[in-house]
Image (cartoon, rainbow, N blue to C red; front, side, top):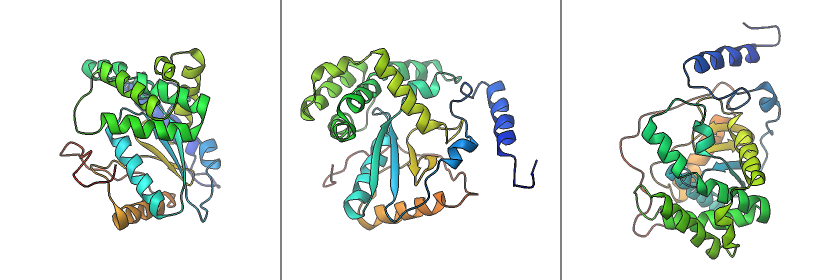
Length: 255
């Protein structure tokens, strides 16, 4: 119900979250819920756009968005920051198909490796590792098995000049760091969050979901449009059903 200061966002969050939780679709309290605090922490737009990208390395759509943002960064001044998230954590409180649950659980290793790289070696190392991992996994469309993820993770560590023992990252400290980063990325988006998650100038969205990597002027135009939508406080969602698998690599396309 509106108040003298505007709509009661906390009440709206409680009502929608209660409905989703009753339907078995919501996460635990504090996870995946939009909060007024998150809105207040949003950075105001600046001359140099800030983009916080939250990645689970196994998600092909996150890989495509990463390549798009790197293309924009090549053409435009951009403050692009990498963070980690987890499809396993995203779905741990949701009612999902058993086959999908097993697939998510079997592909959870790379997000732990990414978190370990970020914690122990910093964001530039994560960039380098993610680039090498994605080049190995997303060279064509397929469903990699658990061993292929391990091999690609280890190969990417070698390419990035990082210790290969990080491939077995499973400590409590790594899990805690991954969950903390995941929560920071997901909370401002809400219960409908998926991957990729992008925060544009502090405004968080699930998406954009791309089927291929736009290049050149197309990449910049898409970024400008996304930033414009992020600056509109009443914009929440724009969606249509995907009709084809992602185009991960085409002849002559920059990696």
